[in-house]
Image 1 (cartoon, rainbow, N blue to C red):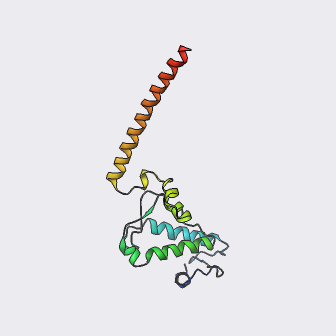
Image 2 (cartoon, helix red, strand yellow):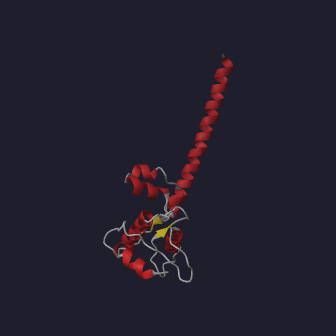
Image 3 (cartoon, helix red, strand yellow):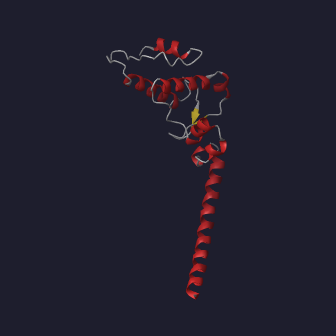
Amino acid sequence: MKTTSWCRHSQSTRIQNLTLLTISFENQPAVDTGGPKREFYAQLFHGIVTSDGSVVPLMFEGAEGRLMPSYNSSVVYTGMMKIMGKIIAHSIVQCGVGFPYLSPVCYWYLITGDVSKAISYGNTEDVRDIEYADLIHKVTKWAVEILCQVFIIIKQEYSRAFLCY
């Protein structure tokens, strides 16, 4: 893989969407009509999200397909999130794969900037604090049980009222 051209391309101060990135893999002859580029971005993103933190700082946490940015000040301080954003933008502009790993909450927040809209796409998998996630599970289970009991009572009352007429 020609990493020098990628490094030079990614360090530019703005996204150069008119300059297409050409990807070639060593010992793999191929004309880059999109396939090698998509494979490059897919491998790059997969390597980042499956990193154990030894080479690339741990930037995301959570279940596969529901990743959230990790609470790591060094990632922000060193500019890694900004670089990650540039890489994702390059991927999209260059007809790459985008970044299909984010939680829907993150995705909708990035798209709309509206927290209330984004939060509607969340579930307990997006809660990183285990104690809070467990509490949410318990409250949800309790609420479902209460609603079921209320439904049974309403159904019984409706049946009695219907039989009286």
